[in-house]
Amino acid sequence: MAGATTTDRRHNGGRSVEREKSPRKSHQSRSRSHRRNGDAHASLPRTRHDIMHGGGGGGHHGGHRQAPRKDGLRGKIPVRPEGESGRTGIHPFHFFKIIWRSTSWLSRAVNVLWPVVPAALAVYWALPKEYFLLKFILAYIGMVPAANLVGFAGQELARKMPHMLGVLTETTLASVVEIILFGVLLSHDSFVLIQGAILGSILATMLLCLGLCFVAAGMRRDEATFDEAITEAGSGLLLTAGIGLAVPSIFERSVTGTAGLDPQVLEQSVLNISHAVAVLLLVSYLVFVFFQTKTHDGIFNAIFEHDERRDHDREKDIMKDKLTLTECVVALAVSIALVALLAVALVEQIEPLIEHHGVTDPFMGLILVPLVEKAAEHLTAIDEAYDNQMNFALSHCLGATLQTALLTGPLIVIIFDMAMLILSIIAVGNFLRDQKSNYLEGFLLIILYVAIAVAAFYFPNVHAAAAGVEGAGASGGGH
Image 1 (cartoon, rainbow, N blue to C red):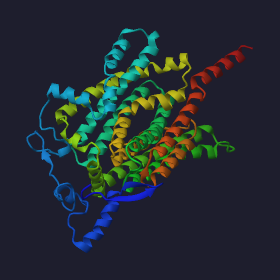
Image 2 (image 1 turned 180 degrees about the vertical axis):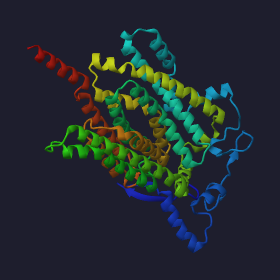
Image 3 (image 1 turned 90 degrees about the vertical axis):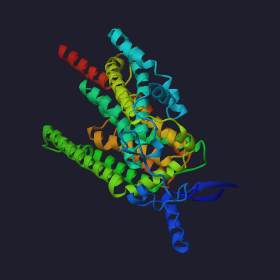
């Protein structure tokens, strides 16, 4: 790889293994060489000025970076070459062709499910309430291609922006599915499901998605490498969020049973602490965004440019047709509207499904709901890991987890135990600390997630427990 990468050959069991060094470490070694030999083309960009004007970097063009071009909107909006469509406005044939092609074979396979979307909406409005199981299944399956379109349109839009801003925009747009689903659950007063879905969303991204990324990357290479700047800040903030979310629960357990303590006073104290922690975590996330986009954006932009250069399908991706800015907006508007409609159809079937088919609240909230709400982010991250863009993949995994933990996570109360979340964070941090991954580590993370899913499946049903208590009270009153 020209300019931006160096390799380290090691022997593993008699065979040579080639491992890419991180762009930051490679940059340090090249800087020393530059001081000795006057090599002016070997260093990565370190500042916004270098990135915007092509200074300091050795890419494929002798150290001169291709300047951002303008799109068709009167030539005023700079667009990165990777996101340049060469068109303006909206062209229906190209629009549907690009959407169907999507980003990878996995996304194209998901697009086969599009006929389920109108079928789900038609069944929801046409059939009576007694068909709740059919309505739930169709709405659940239909959410996957709709969420995938949100993720794809967000990815196309992100490619037109500076790297760090694009990653944040793509992650935020992919979280729209989660926000809509949580909003519909709130409108139905499904607080237990919301609490489970928030915790399940964190665990699904942190364990299942990250594990699948490690496995996907390991299918093409012995080891996949990533930069410590991506994992260091993300895993540190994630551990901070986990401990912060546990503070109200720890406080409640510590003072419960204290003589003379009014239960109402305790409840109000826990609520006040939760509000304070929620504000602190929100401030932490805003500082984290400022850190990535303002004070240290040069480092992150260089890392993502390094990832783009080592993309396994880089040449093919550059040659693909791309959506225009207008088409990105149209695709996002349509897909978000479909997600909202399907979310309403889905949520209305959850309560009768739990009551009549033995599905427990924890399994529904902790496993089933998060899997469909995070589908777009998971598909994007897995595709990036498969193409050797591990820094992008980790940014989506950690970024999505942080958004849930710091923005909606403070709503969590104990479902199993906050210890489960903290132990999962510690396990993920342990796998990330060496800046390498392989399929074995991914498999172990998936096993952890499956173990939690099994526990959720056998966890007592809140609806059944409440009904049992009410029945016992009624029979006791009759005697």
